[in-house]
Length: 260
Image (cartoon, rainbow, N blue to C red; front, side, top):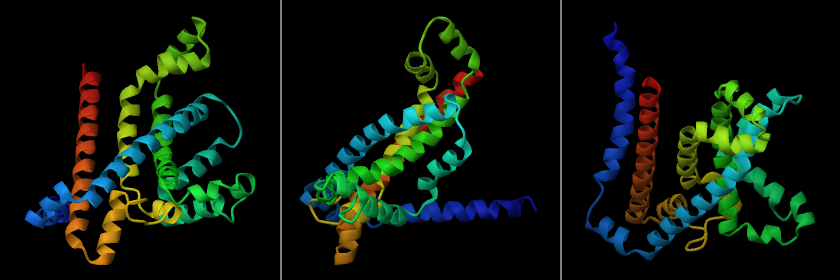
């Protein structure tokens, strides 16, 4: 009976490893040549990395103070606010993208205040907004859990020494949980680089303009150019695997530190 419980695990491994191996088996000289010389793939790669890094910066500026406020500032309705902040993590990306487009587009309320803003959406700015939206949700949730795990004794000691709450956040709390915050940043970066649905709705799919790696896969599959699509998929998978490896290293180091 115990061995039967391994069947779901084996099935899951088959699907994960099988899909990865199937991609790598498609590698040939044409795909390698495209990865090295194709300007469209180079553009998509640079745009993906650049927008994801910018989005991560904005997500940090938004999410760290938001997560800290959730844990340190008492106010009514916090449970409902936590529920709302979790919505981007479960909401289908296309739905999120449509909502952002209706909010920020030409028919949205933001356009009444900033008429020129809607024209910026179908550009890398729209990509950054969509990526920041999904990355912020990840950082808020992980950061909130990290801040809640800090022993209140450290905070009381900092306050007794005359530190303000903001200085305590910068010089005490963040140094205590920086590995968790770094892991959440890497996870958010990977999620931002793989963002497709919200980006498609908000920034559109235009070659050599809003063409991130996920968008390049979509455009090339639609046009029947499977070699370029597979090349972009391989790049995304390699980047995601590298980021995941870094996260596991950080988690392993944290566990070893906790044991000692």
